[in-house]
Each structure stands twice: as C-alpha cells, then as structure tokens.
Length: 242
Image (cartoon, rainbow, N blue to C red):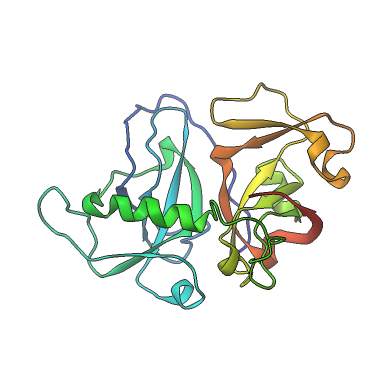
C-alpha cells in the first residue's frame, strides 16, 4: 500500500484525446499503486484532455471495501451496444478509492458506463462526504476522520509536495481507517491558483498548518486516496470541512 511511484511524470509530444466521465479503462499491472498485482478496471470520474489531471475510480470484483462500509457502485458486464463497458465479471467501483492520473498515462478505453454514470456521480458525492459535516458534528460517527487535518509521511509528502492534508472521506467509512480521500494543503506555492484550485485565508486554519503564511492553496485536482496507516503520520487536532 506504500505511496512510492505515485509522482506525475509528463512526456512530450503525446497526442491529446478528449475523455469523458464514464469512460472505463483497464490499467496494466504495476501501472498504479492501486493495481500492482494485476490489470484492473478503473472508471473515469472527470472529463478531461490534454495537460489536465483526470480522476479514476477503482474497480474490483471483490466486496472487501463494501464489507467495511464503503460506498460502491455495482456494474454488470455489457458486451455490446452503446453501453459496452469491457467488463467480463460483475464489478464494484469504489469512489472512496480515487487516483489522479495524467492524460498520457491512460491506455485506450475499453468501454463506457453509460446508464450507470448518474449512479457513479451520486456514489462519488457520498464518498467525498459532501454535505455530511465534519468529525466534530453532533451526528458524526465515533472515530470519524472527516475534515481532520493530518500530517502525511515523508514518502507521500514528496509525491504531493505537501506536509499536511485534509481528510474528505465519508464520515462512517473514514472511521475504518482503510482508504482515506485527502486534499493536499499547500502553504508555499510558486504559481497562481488555477481554475480548479481553492485559495483561502490562512487565518481560518490551525497554527500548526498556517504558521508563516497568510494564504493556503487547496489543489482540488490532486484529491486522491491513500492508505491510512502507510501514508498518515499523525492526526492533528485541527478540523476543517462542512
């Protein structure tokens, strides 16, 4: 589950193809940290092309994370027609397991989720804990991490160029401390905020994160999943999120 090998490397001269949410890809064995053992299906959650980062949702025929309370979407194989998806067995897609990816690292897509796309979007919203409050809320499950600011381990910090991150994971599943969706927190940055970045006042953040800076950049396209024990060094007392 280690985070090594997750850096984003760009290459030159790659032709740009537009992909849209719902495209399904079989990622070769070893091409991502989520499928080092064998090829696995991933569904694209965001439409993108060219230089942008896209976000993939992990797929598996196993019910492991489902049994732990993770939100999922079940998809049956469709071999023909506009909804051909390239799957050979019933597959669970887990939007609590997200992978940012460069356009150039995607193979040819195998199919399209079609009618399942609205369900994927709904499941993704649940996985991100949108509208679910933080772990300090009166209705938050015991041991929830939702909204908790965490310090990440050095290997991951080098990959994402950030020391701290905010846990976005749905409150109930976050308490399992399996996969956690995080948003890196940048306190030093050499570029202006992009279209999909959030630039916020550091005064609203705990001193442990905001010391020495007046602005904090939240790079939304780098929202990704990590493995709690391998990648999180400690959970701070700070909490953000609604």
